[in-house]
Amino acid sequence: MRKVRDETADTIAAISTPIGEAAIGVIRVSGKRSFEIADRVFRSKTGILPSQVESFRALYGHIADPEKDRLLDEVLVLVLKSPRTYTCEDMIEIYGHGGSVSLREILELLIREGARLARPGEFTERAFLNGRIDLSQAEAVLDLIHAKTDASLRCAVEQLGGALSKRVKTFQAELLESLAHLEGAIDFPDEDIEILSERELLGRLSRLYQEMKDLLESASTGIVFREGLTTVITGRPNVGKSSLLNALLHQNRAIVTPIAGTTRDAIEETANIRGIPIRLVDTAGIQETDSQIEVEGIRRSRSYLERADLILLVLDGSEPETHEDETLLHQIEGRPSLCVVNKKDLPQQLNLKRLFDVKNGKRVVNVSAITGEGIAHLEEAISQMVWQGKTFSSEGSLVTNVRHQEALTRAVEALHSAMEHLCHPAPPEIVAVDLREALENVGEIVGEVFTEDLLDKIFSQFCIGK
Image (cartoon, rainbow, N blue to C red; front, side, top):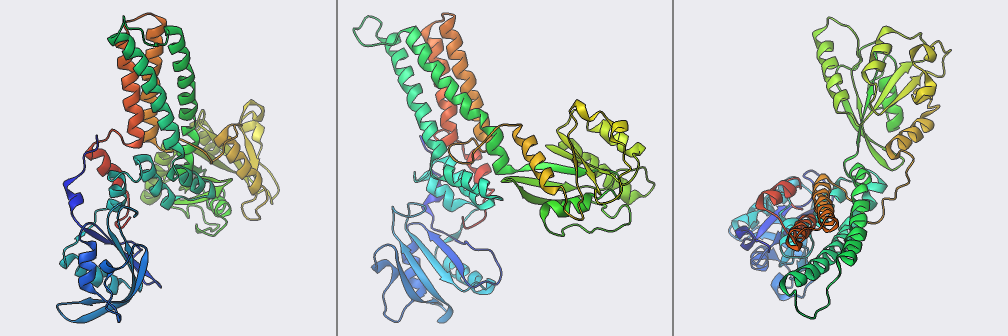
């Protein structure tokens, strides 16, 4: 059962567009007093008040401070009446000019007239609490805002449209039906009612178990689409790490000079590589040094290496191998990594066979970060490393965040336990406990089971006004 916060009785207001100079700025108001407040601050030549018009109608006029009898801005006011609104409450949206001063003054006026400043994500939280969307759809709103590639955008749109929710509801229906048959056998053992045999129930649960596992396996794809893949570019100084970063970004983000040690701290940027959001981290060159600044940069580089999902080790193809190259190869042994031999445009002196046996699984890509030669092959190699030969689509239902993954993992484990108890006859009451646990964990995904702390954790990630 949903527990609605007491704060939902308040009328909230917030600026919903980024602060700064722009053509348009939007302020949202939601709650029972939205129209009452709007009537007091809105002025039009016709005298029509927001509360007097039908829903989805825009009114032209001005926002005025009734105490000071001063116009604040020329605006359009959009009237949105419950329940067919974003929050399922009465709403007003004020479209004014995008100056930060005018928007701030309007917001302060609305608060003085009875609204309060919305918390981060509170509009979307109200949409969830009022039943317009479930919790997975609410999280998809944030994914939509933060999408870095077309693929991650499509994934967020699918989830916002309820693709994951539909799969979860199918699981819930199957679990409930199986639980009903089981509890019928427990409560009415002597009654002449249709009850599934243990074999039939096991077959039903086995099919459901496989479907849930298939969805769980999509987490490796969905979480990458949502959060990106942390890819660390490492190597000794002056091998072309920053040039490679610029080549993969298709823009000059990092400073490139012939001087070794130009990069003293990590630079992070997101690249779109074959639809995959890749968080590229260009690190300081790793070498022996007495410089305190370089020592700190190298310490941070090693810290990033420990947390990397994928490592791009850059080697200088125009120079013979060095002790630093050998040390780095040893450090990334057993980690997901690619060796990028840079400076393909220059005469080659690097002897790869002296560093490692190419035939034993080390993937090597030759590029010129300056001319761009080989960059397309590197992008393809990165894509293959991520998907490991599998083919994935960003369309359809995917598990896109760790919360969903953990809840579904617990549900799959509980369902497996139920199947084990059926195979090795245990009292039906124990099987029923397993099924109820699976049902509860699946319900966490869509928010049928939640706590105040969980809502705070999710919606605090939103901006104010969303």
